[in-house]
Each structure stands twice: as C-alpha cells, then as structure tokens.
Image 1 (tube, rainbow, N blue to C red):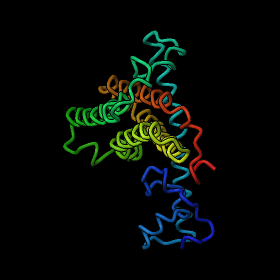
Image 2 (spheres, rainbow, N blue to C red):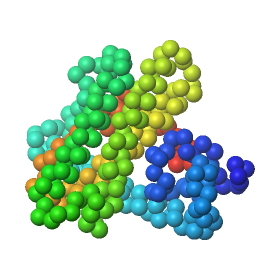
Image 3 (cartoon, rainbow, N blue to C red):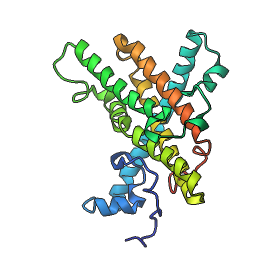
Image 4 (cartoon, rainbow, N blue to C red):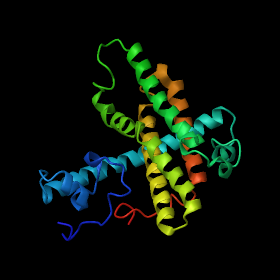
Length: 244
C-alpha cells in the first residue's frame, strides 16, 4: 500500500489528528491503515473536496477574527503596532526555557481550555432550554463549535512538545530536531488560527457572552503571537502535502 501512487510520504507527521475534517485522507497512508473499511477512489476524493471547502470557509472567518481583534484594540486605545508587539512575556523568551509545562505559552493554553469550559457553562446557564449547547448546537453553529472543541485540548500538548524539542535541541544540535520543533509549532499556530476563526463566528450570537468571547479572542491572539516569537521559523515550515 505504501507504494501506491498519489500517497504523500509523511503527511501524517505534522497533522492535527482530525481525519474527519482532513482534505488529504485519500493520500494518507496512516488513514488507510487505521480505516481500511473506508471506501477508496472517488468517494474518498469527494470527501476530501468537501473538507477543503470547509477549511476555505474557515479561512475567510479568520480574516473576520483579525478584524474583530483590531476593532477591540481601537476601542481600548491600543495602537495597531503595539497590538502586534503584545505577547505573554514579561522578560525575553530565551530566559524562560526551563520547564516546558511551566512556560507562559503552555500556561496560556491551559488557561484557554478552562475559558472554553466556562464560556459554554455560562451560555447553558443563561439558556431557557434544557439542552446543552455542546450536545445540541444550532445547525448554523455546529461546525465552528466542532472546531473549538477539537482544538481545545490539542493546543497545550503540542506546545509542550515543541518547547521540549527546543530544550533538547540545545543539548543535541541537529536539523531533524529543528524541523520537528518548527513543524510541531506550525501545527499549534494552525490550530490557534482555526480556533480564532471559529470564535469569530460565535461572536454576536450570544450578546450576554460578548465580553467573554472578546476576552477569548484577545487571549488566543496573544498566544498566537507569543508562539511566533518563540518559534520564528514555524510559519515557514513546509509540511508534507499540506503546504506543497
């Protein structure tokens, strides 16, 4: 199976572990191995095409998220240039590389996961219905909520792995370690980008939660910029299949 034409070697190494939403299942050996019962050929390619369209729509929502963040900054009197410089660090990030799980980025990822739970709990508490938003979302919000929930606990372990890789790189220099660090950090940034896009869709749907939604957007944006500072080569990393 590995020699089958069209498969992309190593595409599964730096993916987000969301096969149901992947646009490359027909070209992934790992997916073929783990889901042999899935039909191949045209059916799988059509599945991929639908997912590609989904992520293109979420890409448009990311533009909306960035616009919202700039509007919030303007409202708070924050200059655009200052907003771009804002990170989680009160000291140079190089001096913080001691324990991956205590790194500001890791702490921020854990905090974000808690913010998500608090947000949904508050919405359910204020709702007049008996059904939870998580289990019975409105049809128009089902997809962005799926995105939020998938990445809620995904970001933290990936950040820790990337930071641990950076720590080990100091002890054992090598291009493979550098590539793995950058590749892992890029997956983190993609997860944050998509999560920002999903929250921008929810913004305005629940006016009583507007402040907390804005807080989440700002928190994620600050985390995104901080990850870019710690891993400056991440955005440029070329993931097999996805980026070429």
